[in-house]
Length: 118
Image (cartoon, rainbow, N blue to C red; front, side, top):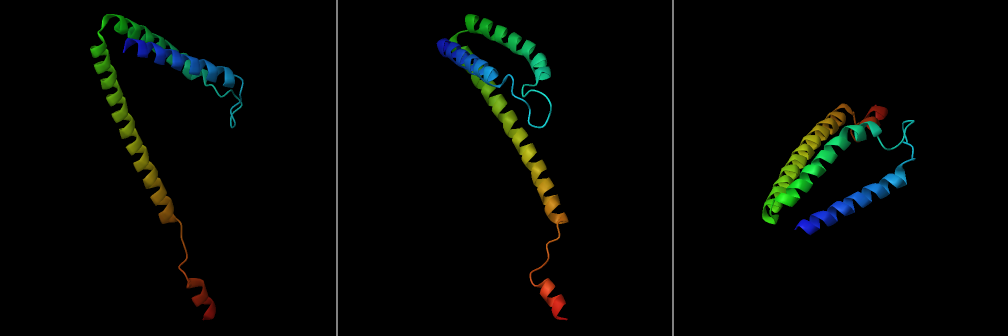
C-alpha cells in the first residue's frame, strides 16, 4: 500500500510539471492574462505543502490498514460532497432552463394561417 502511494504521488507530480511546462505561456481566450491563475496558486500552494508534509508523516507512522481506511473515508466524503454539489448545480440549471422556456412564446401550429384567411 505504501509503495502505491509513492508511485501515485510521483505520477501526479510528473503530470503537473508537464502540464505547467506545456501551458505556462498560453494566453486566456477571453482575458488579457495567462491561463494559469497565479493568485489561486499562491493561496493553494501552502495548504498543498502542509497536506503533503502531514501525509508523509502519516505514511511513516501509521500501518497500511489505517492508511487504507483513512483514504477510503476521504474518498467517500469527497465523492458525496461532489455528488451533492452536482445535484445543486443540476437543480439550479433546470430551474433556469424552465424559466427561459416559459418566457419564450412559441406560436401554435396553424395560428398564423387562420388569421390570414379571415
